Image 1: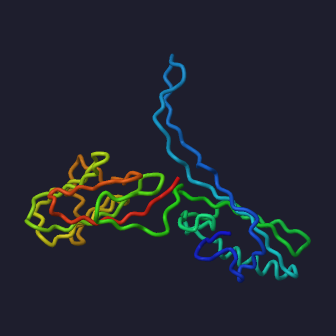
Image 2 (image 1 turned 120 degrees about the vertical axis):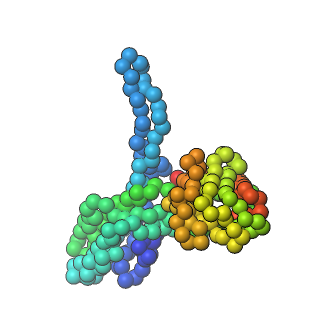
Image 3 (image 1 turned 90 degrees about the horizontal axis):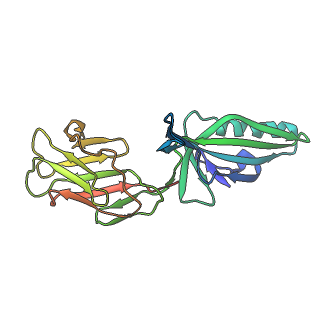
Length: 246
């Protein structure tokens, strides 16, 4: 069983008799970056990017008349007819979701006029599964229990004395985000760094221009334990992050 677009497939109003199967590839496809050089066997390997993930679903519509079959088929069509990705949750992994939408033709093969076998291919442009519940941490080390690094929403509150800079470093990788503002940060200032969107704000105002050139605004939290360090050390850090899995 599965949930999509805010509704479970066993919602009686959808009329689905049985979900036959939901199948995922173990890993999505890859776009490989090779460089071939004349006179050299093979190629240089410059890594790869994961392609969108496809999720296949088959389920049965079964009604007492052809008219009712088509009545519920229209409800299924309305449920699946989305132009943007929606949450897809598989019952065997109820604590995580994909952002997906149907792609290509959605077929309904009719059997004996009262039964239809529906086949849907969902496409998840972002191939990762995300935790339904985000985590919040203000004590380090904290833990990313996913299988791949994830972005974070970092909130830094200036305490103690006025400072002319702020640097937040990830101990495990050495990456950091450093800000040097035109005017000093003062006690009570709240700096928010969204590493997914690569944004920075001071008390709600955009300060991306204050991020230094050697910073990593797209910093991601590694799997396992990780530690964020603030400079000045008196700065209070709180992060919110959503673990993800390949």
